[in-house]
Amino acid sequence: MAFPKDFVWGAATAAYQIEGAAFEDGKGEGIWDVFCRRPGAVWQGHSGENACDHYHRYLEDVEIMKALGVNAYRMEIAWPRVIPEGTGSVNSRGVDFYDRLIDALLGAGIEPWITLYHWNLPQALQRRGGWMSPESPKWFGEFASVVMDKFSDRVNHWMTINEPQVVINHGMVTGVHAPGLRLTTGEALAAGHNLLLAHGRAVSAIRGMAKKAASVGFAPVGWLRRPASGERRDVDAARIATFEVDPSTLWNSAWWMDPVYLGRYPQQGLDAYGKDAPEFTDEDMSLISQGLDFFGVNIYTGAAVKAGVDGRPELVPNPVGYRMNSFDWPIVPDVLYWAGKFFYERYKKPLVITENGTCITECLSKDGKVRDPQRTEFIADHFEQVDRAITDGIPYTGYFYWSLMDNFEWHCGYKHRFGLVYVDFETGKRTVKDSGLYFAETARRGQNQ
Image (cartoon, rainbow, N blue to C red; front, side, top):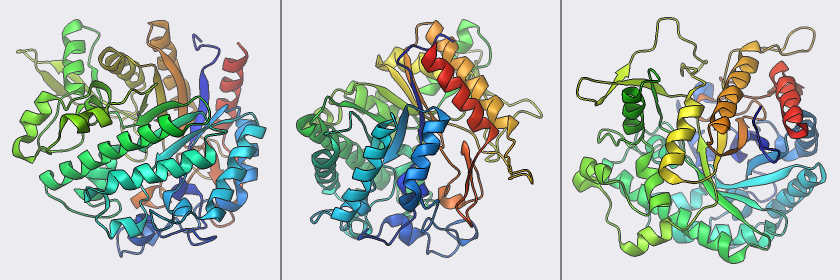
């Protein structure tokens, strides 16, 4: 493999999906605590109240990470656990938990990569308008400042917001995620602008308060198109399609990435959204576009396109019987190559895959093992495409598998399993899957090459 010596071999989680202890040790209520009580909101009425019980089993989980060969762990510091009301008093017991976790990671030789927001806003702030409130960037800046004060003496790597597209589209347009709103396009885009301003406030806090050298990024989801062939016309069409803004949806890449990395909303997006586009100032864009150190992106799948007769992108249907996961997402490993190529061309930053993984239907066998050859093959195929990209000069510097362990998969409850580690949600018992053993072997080989 062409992976550099200092390549980051990581696994990722989010706080609400694994921690449990939803109402312990002074933690405040979050929007997902409330959403999970809504009848019909989550598959079979599941919730993250107990999740994987990581809050009590974190030492065991750190030992598992060490056995998996990961040298980095992408984790979230839960806003409601640290500042229960969203602003104001800090919960010392919540801070203590993350102190212990960070120290355990460092003691195991694992670098924490901290995400500040992975979707569980304090409910007290939702009652004050949530991300629709023009005050929300200040709230997030205050939270980031507290986190930096408490933890930046030991942590170098930071991400502000995970998948802003999901925060806004799923949480405030379709309503399938917390807080379960159904806003107009204009209202949702205004909330999205507040979210980007919050990102900027957090970057300012990180830069201004870091006690150690800080590497800063964020983690949008990649809306991706891949060429149906290697012909230049199809490659050009895929590049165009990857950055287009469809006025019928907020699900795209450029609207959320261009302001952060280029300091402007894409003109095609402003034209597409028209009167629904948010109002903004030059000062807003300066705040949003403070320099980042890496380009983090969550990549799971992507559709194929070809150039039509006029050169415009045309979607190419998936072949009959195509590979897919249990979410029905097509499995197309070369999306990592094309994503790296297109994003590096546009944003000129070293790349980190902040999430990539797959869910399949699997079970614990009678012999106590979890045989998941589809996931093992998924990881191997995707690593091949990262290797291909690095060989071609695309600067991938890290990869975080989603997820470290099976967990609460948001509105789908515990239906889908993404983990390298199997979790028995009745007993909490962890079992490293065959794919986890493969990941460990590959990571160690990569670190020792």
